[in-house]
Image (cartoon, rainbow, N blue to C red; front, top):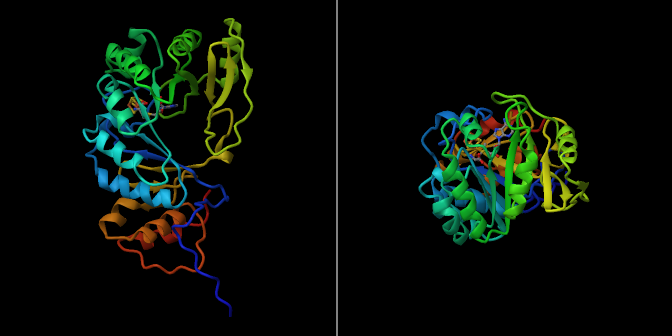
Length: 331
Ligand code: SAM
Ligand code: SF4
C-alpha cells in the first residue's frame, strides 16, 4: 500500500478542524489583575503564581511563527503587572516571522511603561476604559485608580504607537449613556473607540450593538459602515466611519464572528485551548518542561485544534497521549 508522504508539523499553514487558517495568537501572560471589574471572568480575580517565564513564551511564539502565525496579542489578567513584561515583549517581537505585537491593558501601569513597551517592539495597544466618570469607574473596576488610568492613556497617545484602540464594555444602566462622549474623547486623542457587547461572565446587562448604533446616531453622530476587511488582519470588530475617525463594535452576542476566527489562544498556564467548547487542549508548558521538540509541540498544537495530522507517529512526552481521545471534533 502506498504511504502518504509525511508532512512537517511545523510547516504552515496551521488550520483548525474547519479549515480556518490561524494567523493570530492571543497569549495570556498572567491571570493576576489589580482591578476587579464587575463583568470579568472570575479566573482573573484570584491570581495564581505566573508559571511561564520569558524564554518559555518566546519558545511558544517561535513554534507558532514557524507554523505561519504573524501577530501576537499579550493579554491577561493585567499583562503589565508582570515585572518582566518588557523582556517578554522584546523577545516576542524579535521572533522571526512575527510582524505585530499588541497588548490589551487596563492602562494602570502605562504612564511608566508606554514608552519602554514601544521601544520593546510593541506596536499596538488596546486599552480598556468604560467610562469618563470617576465614580462609575470605581464602581466597575472596584479598585482601579481612575487618574492613573487616564495618565496611562495620555502617555500611550504621545508614545507613537501604530494603533491605539479604546475598548468599552457597555452595560445597561451603568455606562450606556456615555458612548457619544467616549467617541469624542477617543477621537480627540487619535484612539479608535470600540464598543463591546457584555458577555455573561459576571454582573451586568448587555446592550445590543444595533441599539448602540441607533443611540449614537440619535446623539447626532453620523455613522456609515466601512467595507469589510477580508484580509487576515480582520478581527471580530466591525468598523463604522464617523466624522472624527472610526468606531468599532464587537458583538459576541448578536453577531456570530466564529466563522472568520483566525486566532489561537494560550492560557497563562501554557495550555492551548481550542475555543470550540474548550474541550481539547495542548499542555504546552508541560510539554516544554518535559523536553518536547519543536515538532512535537507543533504536532500537539495541531491535534488540539482538531486538525488530523497525516503520517506522523511522534512519541509524545508527558501526558500528551491523553490528548488523543479529545481531538478531531472541534465542536
Ligand atoms: N486587563 C486587561 C484589560 O482589561 O484590558 C486585559 C484583559 S481583559 C480580560 C481583556 C478585555 O476583555 C478587556 O477589554 C475587557 O473589557 C474585556 N472583557 C472582560 N470581561 C468581559 C465581558 N464579560 N464581556 C465583554 N468583554 C469583557
Ligand atoms: Fe478583567 Fe481586565 Fe478588568 Fe482585570 S482589568 S478585571 S483582567 S477586564
